[in-house]
Structure formats: C-alpha cells, structure tokens
Image (cartoon, rainbow, N blue to C red; front, side):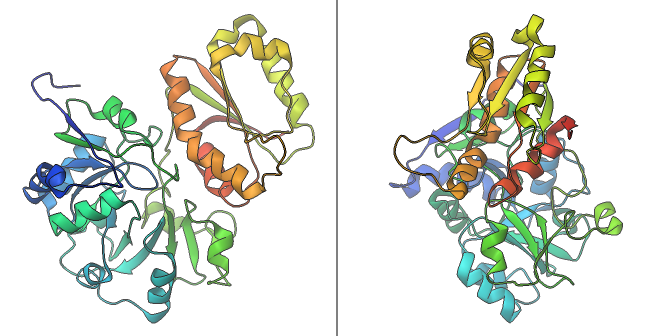
Length: 369
C-alpha cells in the first residue's frame, strides 16, 4: 500500500538538455543505497547500485519480485564493463562495438564485485549499455553500474512513461526521473553468445534479423531450442514467470491464420450485450472492423495500425509501432476498468517477435483456430 507520509518526488529532465545539477538528488540516493526510477530507451527502470545487497533487496521488495528472477545491470562504458566481469571475449567485444549503446543485453561471467542477489546466485550477469542520454548521465555521475529491472509492480505491463511508474510506485520510492516517453517500448533483447547454440533468451528491442547478420547460428529460446534446467534456474528475466499482465483478462488472437477476420467477429458477437466490458487493440491493417463494433467499442478501441495516405509503410516499421505502444495500450485499457482486452496478434518478424513474446505471457486465453 501507498505510505501517505512518504512522498515520491518527480523530476522532469529534457534528455537533449541535461543539467547535472538536476540529477544530483538521484545520484545521492543511489550512492546511499537507495532506489530511483529512470528512463531508458526501452522501458523505465527501477535502479540501484549493483554493488549493494541492501539496495538490491529494496528493488525486490518494492516490485514484489521473486528472488530467483535475476536483474539486468546497466553500464555507461566498456571500462565499467571490464571492472565487473571476469573477461570480455573477443567475439562479444565486437558485438558490443556494433550494438552498444542500445537495447541489447549480453550474459557475462561476473566477478566478485557483483553480489549473488543480483544474479539469483548464478555465475553469469546480464549487462547492457542503454542509449538513453539521461540513463547514461545518471550512471556516469553516480559512478555505479545500476541493477535495474522494469519499474513496474512484478507481473504488470512494463512502464513506458513516467505516469506508469507513478501509478505503481507513488508513495513507495523516493524519486522518479521523468524523461518522457520511451522510444522503443519493449525491454532489451537478451542473448547468451557463448552458449551452444548461441541463444536469444528474451526477444526485445533489437531484432533477431539484425543479430543474425553477426551471429549466423543464433537461435531463439522456446522457438528453436528449449532447456528445462534453464527455465528452473533462469539466467535472465522473462524465462520463468508470467509477466506483462494487466488486471483485465487478455484474449490474444494468433496472427498465423487465414480466418482471423471471422474469428474476431465471432468473439465480438459474443460480447454484443456487454461491449462496455471489453477493450480492443487493433494491430492488423488488413482486418476491417464493422461500423457497429467501432461505435460500440468507442474509446475502448485502441488502433495501433500505422496508416499512411500515399506511402507504403514497410513491415518493420509497422511492427516497431506496435512494439512502441503495446504496453501503453494495455495500461490504458486497464485504467478504463474493462474486464477483457482482445488483442490481434502480429507476425513474429522484426519487433513482432518481442511483441508476441510479451502478449503470450500476458494472455489469459490464446485463440489458435
């Protein structure tokens, strides 16, 4: 519950015009084993010193996060990376040079500076270098690698705006840095380069298609490869627990079916007497909703299709737009107190892989006719 005597402060910062003084309070909190919510290019993170067990425990308590769900550590330089891992293999270094800073998290063998509570007792630590300028400056000024899961109550949709963080943590954490809307909208892609085969453990903001150009034998966990042991002792977030779920029950309609249009109408017809109970997330420009449904859904319809008048929008851009807004859409419909949220699934190309990964984990029911 919110503690009325504990006020969460919100500091608004322009990422294009960062004044170090504006971050001073956040830096002091972090250096004194406190926690701060801050923006990254993917989602908002709930950060604390990766060196402090006391601070890390505050993250787990605030989120209600299971202790066997490891955290991702955020850094601002290769020097900081080298100070917290046993080694940076040559093949991994070239990957860092290509994709960092950015939405890519890589597993490394940790050294003794990183406490076991960050990694759920495992010898590997997940690390990334965010491209968000506020996150970079915060890490640099604090002089600390920051362990930072998404800044949401565990299991809820991830936060892509400061208002989402405030909804979950007002009166529970000392400070939120408001850096505006996140650019990517889904968490980072997590990979293990040195496993056999090399694996994407969690799809995210960096597309599989891009990574395949550099790692030819790269596989996707749960799609190309499974390992029950890995699921019992996950080395990265997103492998073991149900995530991203709003209070409303999510009904996901899988995209890979020719009769998707008729399935949607069948579902909507079953709600004709109580359409006010449902929200609808429209992602597929080829699906046409009848005027009757548009009228009855009203503001409970969120259209994430990317339409243009004269130009052809490439598929990659269409899926990136859905990824950017999917968590926002789930939270928006939840705020309207609907009982069910119907979502059109999309292809698993490009950002669609990350979107479908999140929606399947959020779903109460998945329709595959």
